[in-house]
Image 1: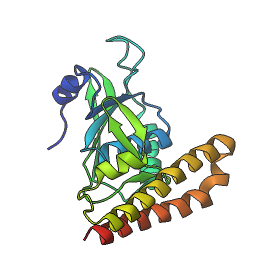
Image 2: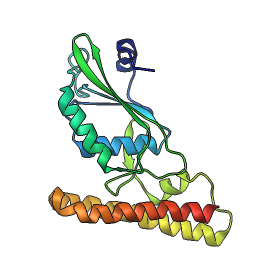
Image 3: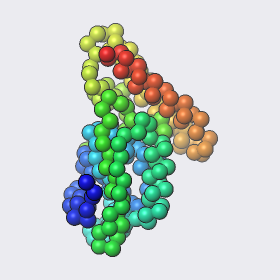
Length: 199
């Protein structure tokens, strides 16, 4: 069912929280991808673009440039693996356009953005830790040996995310592409191994 201007106005009246995030219209694709993974890994949610978080209403409602928003979303989705179900709409409210992105949860998968995974914790996104990864598993291993193996995999994945962040801060984006691809593959393997160990 399409999002209406009334739906957007209702969202704009709510505070940010576990299932709602506001972003300015020119958010970087990397930031968008991180938000998508956080919601997909934490029960789903909605991101409304075209809102300045640092201003009170009505000054915070700035709208988006639709073409720029569409390009940023396309680039963001290229970073996200495996891809959750995401609905993207542009809705006009009072002569301004807002981007509305609805992210569905992806049960049984561990969604990442360029080799990193995020979770939604209240109104913030947090990078995956070993403990958070373990809590997100659909089934907790009963066998101590399997539990130890899964914890080792979760720890390896969480530490790779930290390494990627350090490299991102130290280097240019293009120099990191091969590493991100490798780590994306590692993350996919992690998901398969955990699934095999738990079944």
